[in-house]
Length: 146
Image (tube, rainbow, N blue to C red):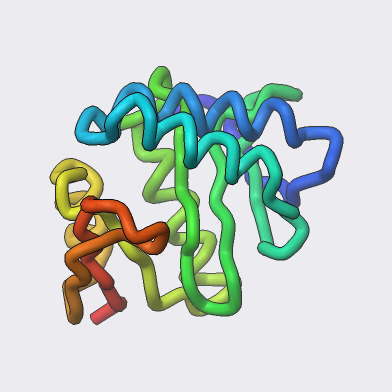
């Protein structure tokens, strides 16, 4: 693992962060319909990211991943596909544990790789909803830290 650092999000990183989100979702969320992907992308583009506490994973000046927290819940965690499976997700999760005592996360049930990752990081499913937070047919697993 090379020298990736974690730094607080700044508004100047918005377009790079959104690009990481898009590349990550296209690489990992194969279950999303094209239309639902567009809807979520548009919602994210309009979202005030400053409502969250966001940290970017940086390689030099390049955003290679990010994590958004709200209170003790990890609301988003995305890595550029080039960096998935190299320990960077663990680095972000541990940062959330150590600095925010994060204990909650939701994961799409169809995203089995993410589910396995979060279980490995010490989360367990405590609830399931048939639909996602937008009312779409993508069941969500609500997880908490053991």
